[in-house]
Image (cartoon, rainbow, N blue to C red; front, side):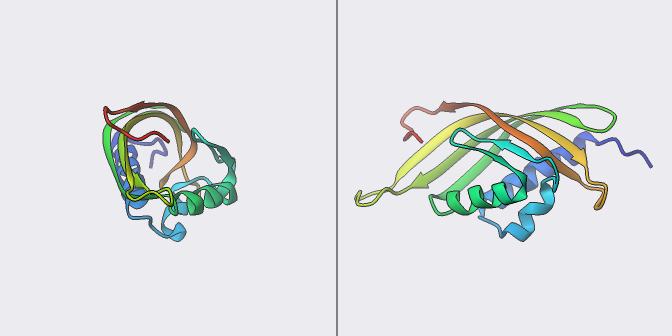
Length: 145
């Protein structure tokens, strides 16, 4: 059996990732999508390393953002022998409330990202080993981060 990743597996990983983020899934459901060694994630507000770093980031952001909707616009992979470089563009919308404001604000943007995906040696499934947010393009009328 080939260990090379497939386009279909990468598409499924991206869809699963954002579905779990939308519903603020428990960490036990999200962590299997991430590498347990060598993980690096670069967000606009922080760079986190390892699963513990991701856990801290995730626990913080699920308490800030709500009514999240991630819509994949592009998942384009360059698949190599043991990894894939993946260009992802996702439309992200989320609400945020800053006390004591009377109303929440809506953030709406496209996030351009680069992922590195490898196959897990233990589960055999694709996992994210590197995740970089390259840029954010705000939609008209969007609140800012």
